[in-house]
Length: 171
Image (tube, rainbow, N blue to C red; front, side, top):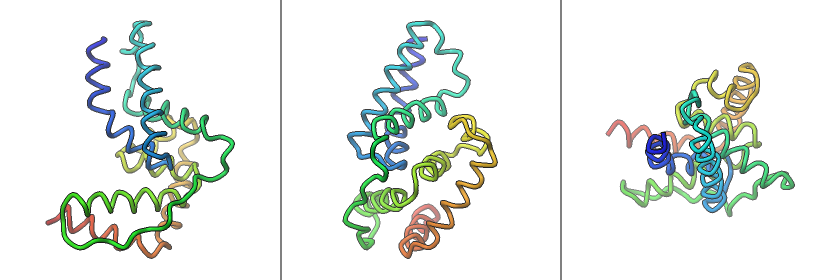
């Protein structure tokens, strides 16, 4: 069981940090949330109940998200950066990093509940899984997803980001 958890943590850490950043966290806060998930997961290992976690990836994201939200309850809005940098030309690491920055900045313009739903979406979770992880009805997940997409479609930069992702994945 210990090795199963360690393997899970090694494979999920980077994705978990990215997920929490999608919800509006800074890199440092996202790493802190991932560490909190590791502590709670390790407690489950020590209590010999890690194997009872039905969906470890969803559980990890819910724990990390809850920790991040608890740490920032007093803030009404996650501060935005200076704005979205214009896309750089040419493929490569720098462009992909810029795209990730743009996406995180766009997601920070959403309210916390919408960010959480979209972050789960970006990690490939179904509506039912999102509802279970967040403890909300599936209808609310659908409503939050629709609200977020409507907001994001109104942003002038979203079309260029989506276009770049399509070219990158199809090319």
